[in-house]
Image 1 (cartoon, helix red, strand yellow):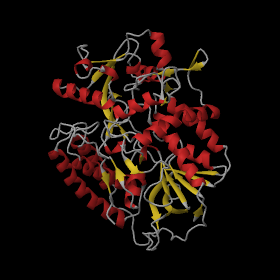
Image 2 (cartoon, helix red, strand yellow):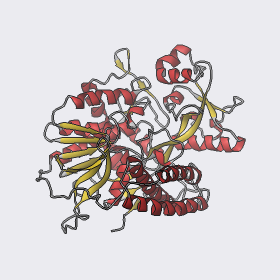
Image 3 (cartoon, one colour):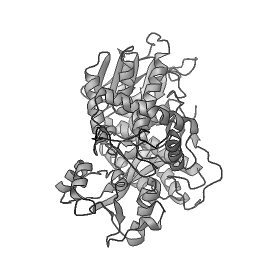
Image 4 (tube, one colour):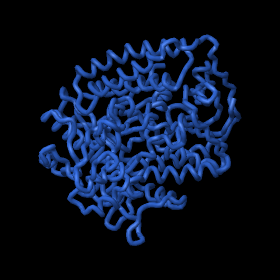
Length: 523
């Protein structure tokens, strides 16, 4: 048994921010299934949206977010994030994040869907710089203990233990990969900051850790999930056979990048008046359309008309990475394809990050706050992490701390070692392929039915495996991905319209009234 005041699952910007806010008053454990640097936050290139420039306003940022969200963004949540964004930037600057400057002032860039320059950034590697700064601070902060290589197995709840009182989160079980043992962590407060679920798709910009662990665990524990059909596909992921997906930031289009067919024809103006600066869902569908129409493997993003010095200064990491692959972006266009990028839905929370389960908060991409609606506006994700990490921390600090609850240790007395681990890798591959084919950028009723049928078969097989054999990280991630895939398909089947990131050929029109898709787990 390991006892803490607060357990935080996830070491991205949301989890680290919450830990730093709580450390002065609470004993905090951060659990992360790989190393501290392996989450999605460190991969964020573009920056963080906040109203800081002359002529910009909260109202404008709110309006841009609502437009991108296609009528489904919650107004109260949107105002909450936008109005607290500048103080979040100030907090990061106090911690020492080296934001890019120009003539002594923060350099603000512009991205698709924004009506003003309001993106604070560290060249084209904002997430990495922020993560380095926060990880260094966390490692030097008393009251924070970090458990790397610890994978969440499940939340411990009073209902699962047969207790009659209000269903409450009492802690969690985690697999320690160093010892191959399941450890019991007890705490009166737990924060899920586990990121999204991009790995449910064959092509994604996300790291291998993005397997929907928090969403699946919260669902099993009795929490509602909302708007899981809205998976954002980033329009511009590097297309190259020798490397894993590498994101080409939105800022390339913000600084004049043009999308071209192989013959050099620019196609975005024919799809939307905003051309390359249209929201991501519009651009991703346009690329998907052109690729299918012309039978293309990719399209091209060209920034070579800008001066070489400008390109190298603004996009040094993209320039260097592409150069390693023989692509000089100062002279050549970049081959790109859409890829699963961001989970707009998630665990249903309020403005304090509280879930339906007492003692459990959710923050960051794993949560549904209402901010993103049917499509996330570029660079609104990192600021959401910080705003709600602070809000959840304040809520926890205002809550009296009870003593550690009595919980049982993990029991694996009736399981054996798996005889064929190939079952896991085969099912993992099958799941990601049919989700890409049937539940991707463009959907139909028939495709969703096919996906649902295959999910049911996989669930039965995986549950049998989970019940009878020693658990591994691969098995836990597959179990969570199948749960998340089921939630995505159920949500997509419930939405009889096309809105934002959810586009259905069977329901191509948008309904007059926008309603979120809320799923409630069976008791």
